[in-house]
Image 1 (cartoon, one colour):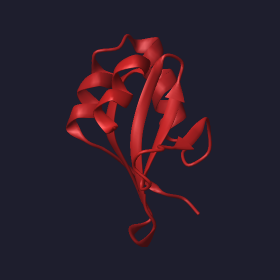
Image 2: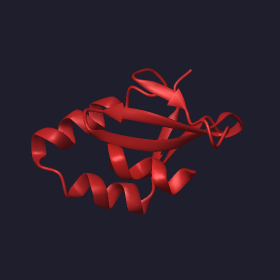
Image 3: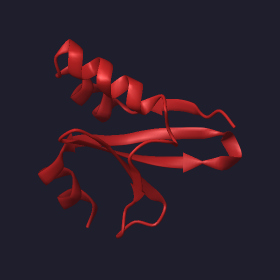
Length: 84
């Protein structure tokens, strides 16, 4: 099943701040979802995280719409503090 990918404004701004090589790496990982280095967040059962190097992306899978929505992005140490 192929999911449509939707990136929210906050995550898009984070990606845009990265250099071109990092952006390419990030987009490759995002468009491979739901495969890749992913795990469910322990605190929020409906949310998942994608690891791309030192960056983390929080996303939600909406099966009835066949959609993956990238909600947030940040550095490894900072992203989990937002989702306790």
